[in-house]
Image (cartoon, each protein chain N blue to C red):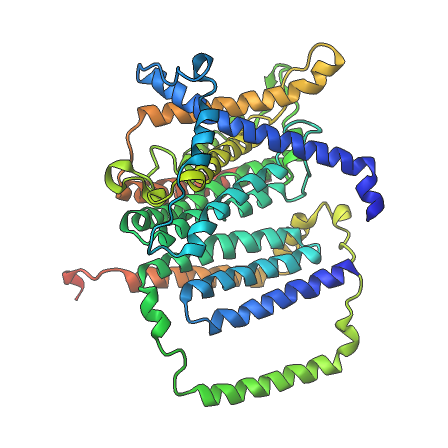
Length: 174
Length: 337
């Protein structure tokens, strides 16, 4: 019962602050709510007995990516961004597509309403397999080896691309 | 639930929390005295001598002064974030003590992912600095905060990567088991500490740890000569004291982690009667931490500050490749043996 309450509390926090991230005018507030969302997701991982993933979630997203966001925010004039127009002319189309999406999700939820009460989470034999981190490692390097390697190559390409794009051109190259 | 609150397990947990929290807070306060005294000796000064014998009551006088000083909030500061920033920096710094094993039994909780927990928690400390510098709405704090965030992101990478080699040898993320894995000895007298197996990782760890805690020679976030006092220029009174406490707490945390990962944690020779055997592990652990703190202070009083581009070059072009090479080499050796 406690796990169910925690799961839905974290879920609600994640969704509500997720909405606030895109509706707040002040970017600093948006960043703060993004932090709340990321923490709530880490909390959901914890209620599912995935301690390793929860820790990595906080390290990578809150301790890394969000810091970079805040770093950029400090460089821009926040006062101006508050008065900036938040939506452009495509908002009617966006509204229609998201309404359709919401109906779809609602229908999906309705069809699967029996599964809304989560089954009691059994810690997936963590002690037997030697702990949560070991299980993640084993899964990554055996069953999901190929997707894992493809993802790492993709990230490498993205990094190289970012370096190439942001590098200053010397006169000789032009 | 109410049965648990009256059980002896809960009482023992509460006692552990009070002992560890009280001990750590007291130690943090006296670290300021140690730092001032040691630095003074290095620079051939007597240091604090007036309050109490050897100036021993100086930290208490300082604490009272922090309490009664005027609490200034700059007129154009973002009030909420300005007040929140010291709290944001102190809470993660103190939270990490909840998983550190101060002895075989003196540990609040032994998480299976204890090391990951500490890295996750300490990676939040940068928010206190960044928010404090930004919310002050003044140029020197902003400069300090920006330098600090760039520096901490850069050195966090090599700090985290440097411990991977140790983890490959110990096969665990639990801090208690990390200590247990270093209990045996070679030839009967050389302790089986990871420092002998992972010397390169240890060097990378120490350098990155000094950079992570914003201490000299990596204190570009404060850098008095250029930025007045960096990100906490506008802070006064108890808010400033919270920033200072957080800095010292972070120093103790990284020193404790270094002790646990490379110097066998609380392990050491156990002699004497029963009660001494119970107390000695904690004594060894605290002494090893103290050695690191001493090293920190000596470093601060002898080495000049890096330039900003040197700092970035060193982090990305020396420490990061070195820690990756260390991981590669260690994984080869572990795979072969």
